[in-house]
Image (tube, rainbow, N blue to C red; front, side, top):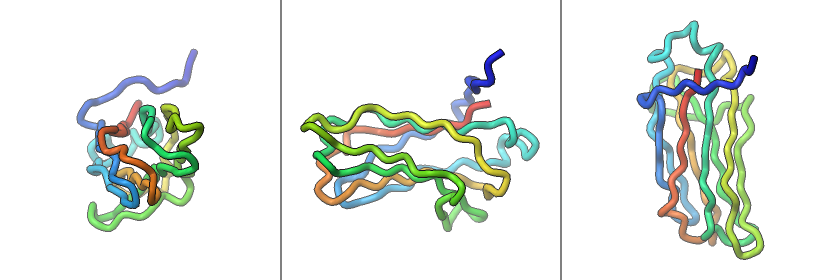
Length: 134
């Protein structure tokens, strides 16, 4: 029996365009109370970033999971590592996916911040997606 989470609710899926180089963007947030507090233990968060062919060599795109108690002031969830992709070989970066379980200390609202380094190329036609799976 597999423990992989695959059931998704499209109300719990967020898609956001990457920012220009030297900028960052916060995705829309999801209210974790929408899934119920008891269900949080069985939920995984999945971030998907497609290939970024225009990401310049040695520059990065960093995706950071953030939380907030008030849906206004967000900070990174310290227990969770960021997802970083790096351009290389003149071909940008390959697609990347990460699944994580949210720690019990996660605040009510969550979002994902995407940051592109200065000189990172024009990746504004690429969008990342994150969703909750149970």
